[in-house]
Amino acid sequence: MEMEIAQRLKDIASDFEPSVEEPELTMFWLISRYNRKYKNTELIGGEWVRENIPEFANLP
Image 1 (tube, rainbow, N blue to C red):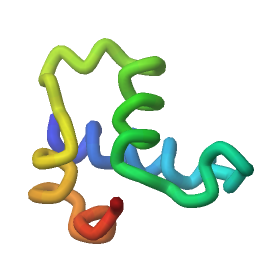
Image 2 (image 1 turned 120 degrees about the horizontal axis):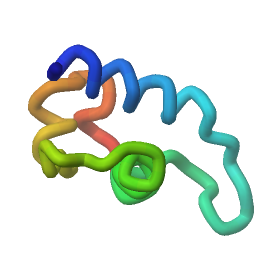
Image 3 (image 1 turned 180 degrees about the horizontal axis):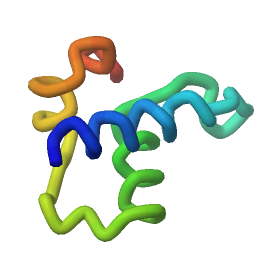
């Protein structure tokens, strides 16, 4: 399941397009979009993302 969640987050991040309101990909944006699209029964958050997806570990 962790790999599936990680892939979902990577897919969401790949859809990110900078805007005036969101000039850069942030952990808040990523988790918010995940919560909109999926139920998040695992209650993942920024800490989970940092521990399981190294390329997102430094997101603000």
